[in-house]
View 1 (cartoon, helix red, strand yellow):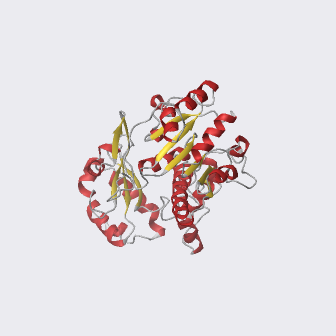
View 2: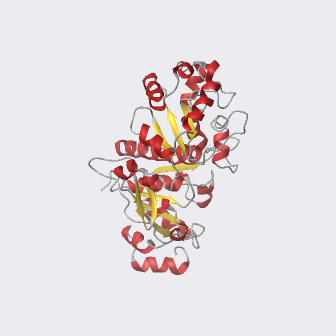
View 3: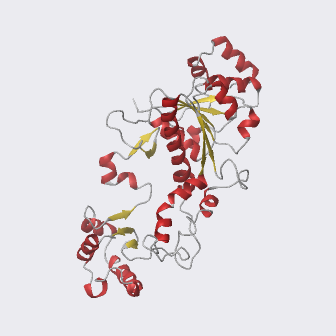
Length: 377
């Protein structure tokens, strides 16, 4: 049983960071019930990993009876995940005031891009827009070239899903102590800003040029912190920041001390980068792995996400699992006494409607009547 065994989370259907949060909570043992609309796309066909471990109910939230079904469920829940734009839940009659009146201990977790208030609150947006407003996108990319989107990891997932999980766990802990619920305003723009904490410190201390890409310690400017092409066209990454790690890099790669001896000599950065580029092209990725992997060089091969599950280190730690034929990340973090686990793969849309409602006290005849009326599906 995971550490959240006994907790019930109701997740209103959405995409991206909110379902990710629900997935993590389900992995940790919570009963996560996803509320879908009729006709929603089958996650077993789309192979949406975020559906794992969740129950699926179809409830018509545009029907007053459907709204009442959800509110009765909320009476027995610990948390509701709201993935909609600000004000949508209120229009549906399931806003925080209504829900907390039904269940004063409820944690109402709201996931948006721009937050619940402010001039952009009701505007559409995506990860790329949220990280644009925090400096994260501006700082990512090569010198003289346009910014490069880091997938949707910084805004949606790190600044969104992870932030919401963090807020929910803290609010559940506080609710256990106080007996009172509260509303969480988790905004991806806020989360992305938090992820930039280190660079604000660097800039304030005079150690970061925020106006130029690829001109700083961690943005690819330094020859000892970058990726390099190998002779076979594959890539490796180096992160030899500390002097002892850099010394080992020089030893393992056979670098000329006359060229590379002064690690932080900015007047020779271009020369050192060019020279190291040529050195790394003399061997294949596998050959560099044999020389450097597992040492304190701070080295790793650059793998695509389909090759990553086959790497011996990931195999040894069971970092990836297979659920319903889909290779995917295993639950994390790891708990010594109450391990997280994937309880099952994706359920079909509405597959658990009858069972879940019965578990929450709905009578068999009541469920049948709600289905006949179109309030549930």
